[in-house]
Image (cartoon, rainbow, N blue to C red; front, side, top):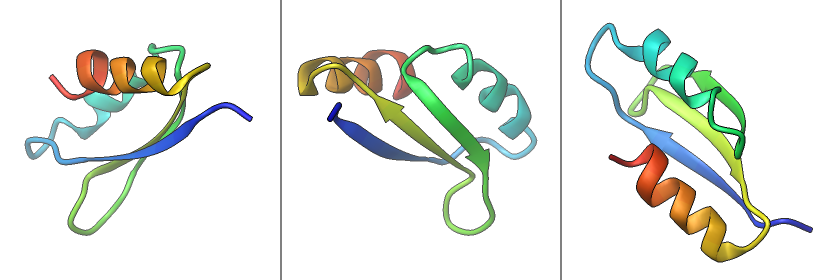
Length: 63
């Protein structure tokens, strides 16, 4: 089973759709949804290894 992470993301007001569109271009992002509450987006991210998962989250999603 591949490592999976659920990433909770805060965005600037009004940027949710643009960020969702960009997230869905990343192959490791399997699902991404706008949500209501403390966070604005929840993304399910997979990687072949924990190192790959960490790299994708740290360098492609978090910046």
